[in-house]
Length: 237
Ligand code: ADP
Ligand code: MG
Image (cartoon, rainbow, N blue to C red; front, top):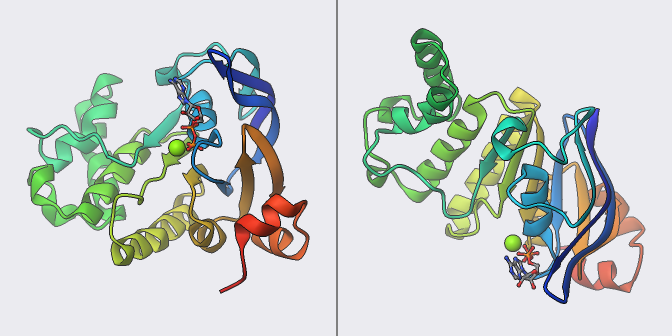
């Protein structure tokens, strides 16, 4: 079981954003899509999520063809850089939202929201508004909201990019710990080599709409596939 991406291509007009991507993302892992800005990382993530359609190719999620399945039925949780919270809803209501639109029973929603807020240590903020949280706490709320629906796959696009260095570091540890606890297949986009190397089990280096290399952090350092990877990773710090 995994996410299988087969011959996925995407153009914007004449511009080739993704060229024939073939990729297997292991189930239960924490995978980073790493590469310079404009390389196609977000486009690929959005295609996995079903927020964008590929021009060619096929997406399989945990054994089922998802290519023509709409986003809300793919079983994916999504966290963006600028989290999209409902400003006038409490933290608890925000976390409950995905369950409410899926018409889950009230008691089930309440129990799940409670668990999720405990998971991200926000229980004491359940009744606050998102504007009353710090940036880091808001992204933890976004994580709780994405995980609330028990997604098969958790997708994050530069989730910590807008935060300062200290909070970013804290949230990396959070993501790592959450993943170790819930083991959901997770794919996150970053342009930050250090972030990918520190957090991910598996790294996909993407540049110019192509996959340059796939491997563990050690693989990438010990056996960079080409000059691009070698230069992009830079010296070990
Ligand atoms: P990354 O996330 O790696 O920075 P993106 O996937 O966002 O890269 O973008 C890859 C390329 O595709 C960029 O050059 C971007 O400008 C272009 N692109 C992305 N989305 C669109 C769009 N909706 N319309 C036109 N060009 C786009
Ligand atoms: Mg991007």
